[in-house]
Length: 177
Image 1 (cartoon, rainbow, N blue to C red):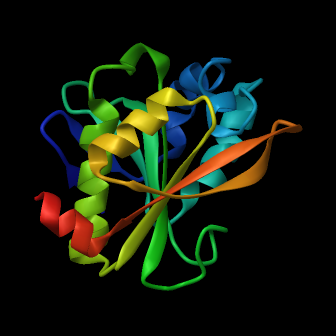
Image 2: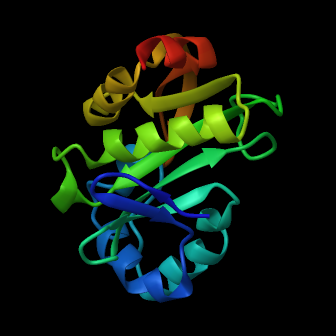
Image 3: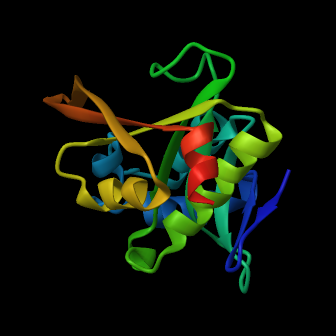
């Protein structure tokens, strides 16, 4: 499955993407904001490609001009998220390589994933969250129309913090189109 936006192609991750993944995932400003430690080796990135980034709705965000991945976005289906156990709901998760922050790539990619979730997968709601203090992720979710639902305690790299959980229903999404 491949999805396309104005500037991006969203496609499944491939083994050949390991070096690009490692380049961005080793940055100490990227992973911890999402709850994971920076990658320490190319082998670690290869292992993550085969496990974490191998979900059926997990996409490498690739620049159209180069075809190289710069981040990821995923619709985590029931059984792969702790935000819902319903088959008609999922969770949106994402991260982006630091050189591409602030250029609108993530709202662009996530908007296409939301379209896919509601129109093609038949979702009635999409959950999304961020850790307190991650204002970039909060802004992405606000731009997409997510509304605050609840806070929950979470551990991020062994430290307690607050997880902000947001929700976007199909009806809310349709009203914004």
